[in-house]
Length: 168
Ligand SMILES: [Zn+2]
Image 1 (cartoon, rainbow, N blue to C red):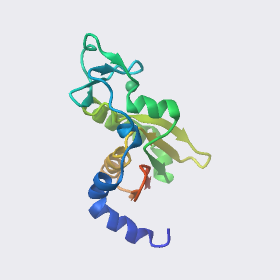
Image 2 (image 1 turned 45 degrees about the horizontal axis):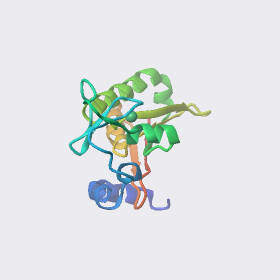
Image 3 (image 1 turned 90 degrees about the vertical axis):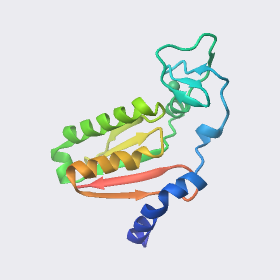
């Protein structure tokens, strides 16, 4: 990462295109579930070509583990957000609450967007892993919007692991 700043600036302007064109989530494209299907783990329903929350599983639905629960089972995140710095240490719970609220808000609309794990590192920073590749950016931006600080995002050219890091 010698020209990191340049990379970050360049990627910011074209990351959406990159994500659309070049990054395929293997957990999304692996197989097409039967319709309707219900995830036995979280209850999300696959119907009309997408995973969605429904009040109750449709009658006669097949069972199929959804892509988010598959990632959680396999311990294969789609992306990471690292939170670090002195300010973070002092406001840890408050900032992590914002993260949880932001993800919950997203999950209500997009069922496959979830936190996989929040891991405390020895140096006091936190690494949050997600089931979905747009979350590191949107959650990182929510933290940056609320608390300033510095956000860096690395988008993959190939593969699907997005890394974001916020520091203050
Ligand atoms: Zn599920």
